[in-house]
Amino acid sequence: MPTAPQGSDSGLYVSFWNQLLEKTRLQTSLFRGAAPKAGAELTVKQGALRWSFVVSDNASLVALQVGDTDANRVISERLLAHQHEIDLACGARLIWRQGHAADEPALVVIWRVEEYGPATTGDWTGLQDALVDAMARLYGACRPYLTEKPGQPAPARPAPDADIEGLAQRFTEDLINAHYLLGEETGYSAAQFLGSVRRHGGVDAARRSLRVSQPEGLETLRKMHRLDISVEAYVLRPEYAALFTEDEREIARARLRSCGYPV
Image: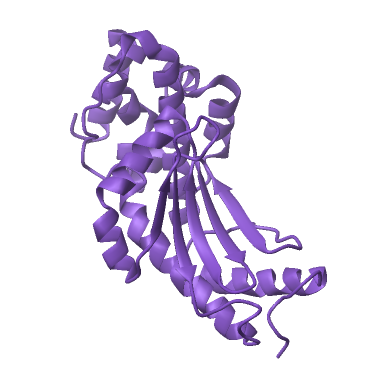
C-alpha cells in the first residue's frame, strides 16, 4: 500500500483522489463526474455551494463553502440557525466562518480531521476513509437546510422594492441550487432548464417556461413528488411576488392545482 500523498508527487495525488472519489460516491451523491487534478485540494461546485477535501501536512479537512450573493446568504442564515443541530449530527465541533467582505464566501463550514495528514500517517486507506466519513456526515447534516423542506412553504422573506435586481439574482440562485441538489440526490438532469436559467436568468427562464403549454419538467417533477421545487412553485413563493405579474402567478397556480399540488 503506498503512503499518503506528499510533496510534489502529482501522480500520487491524482491516484489518491481517484480512489477517494470512488469511496465518496458509495456514501453520498456528491462528486459525480469530478475529475481530480494534482494538488492538495479537491473541490466540486454545486450551484452556489462548493464541497471540498483538503489534505495538509499535519491534518486534513472537509469543507462546505456558500457563495456571497444575497440569495446564498439566505442559505448561510439557514445553516447558522441550525448550527447546534449540525454539530451534533456530525459528532464533531465544526469551524464556522462567516464572510463580511464583498469578495468573501458568505459562510464556510470546516470539519478538521485532526488525526490524519500526510506528515502524520502513512495509512492511505485510513486517511481516505476518515475524509469520506466526515464528508458523508457533513453532507447529511447540512442537506435538510440547503433548500426548503419538501411539501413545506418557504418562510416569508421581505422583497425590497428598491432591490429587484438582487431579488431576481436570489430567485436564480434558489432555482439552480434546488435543481442541482435534486440531481445529486436522484440523478435527474434538468440540463435544458438549467441552461436556460444560465443564459437568460431565473426570472426570464421562468417566464419562458410559463409560456410553454405543456412543460415536460413539471410532469417529471410530479412523478418524483418534487413539485415543491418546480418553476411554478417558486413563482408563487411570497418573497418573489414582486418579480411576476398576477397573470403569470395565476398560470403557475393553475398548473400546480392540475397536478394535485396544494396552492
